[in-house]
Image 1 (tube, one colour):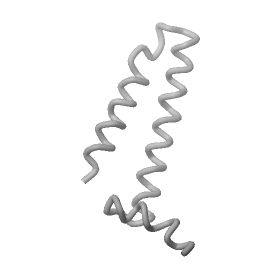
Image 2: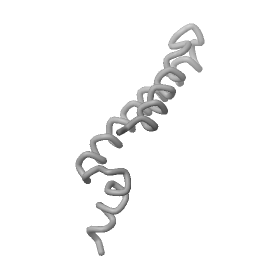
Image 3: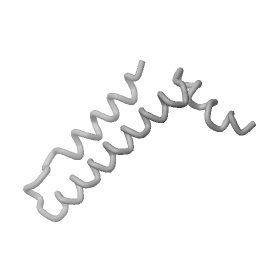
Image 4: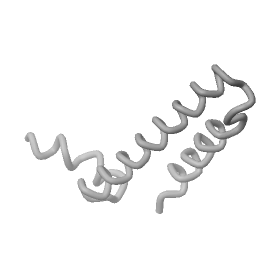
Length: 67
């Protein structure tokens, strides 16, 4: 039962637990970086004008073209 918590979703996207953890971890780190760029942009609009939106677009593309 507990093992299903770690394996059902990854197998539904044709990944092992470790493959899914790596993908989700990289995704999260990229989101944090995009949030940082957006925050700096909020304070100084001339900085990182397109960085956060570019990163989010790249994540969207990566998510929908995984296999």
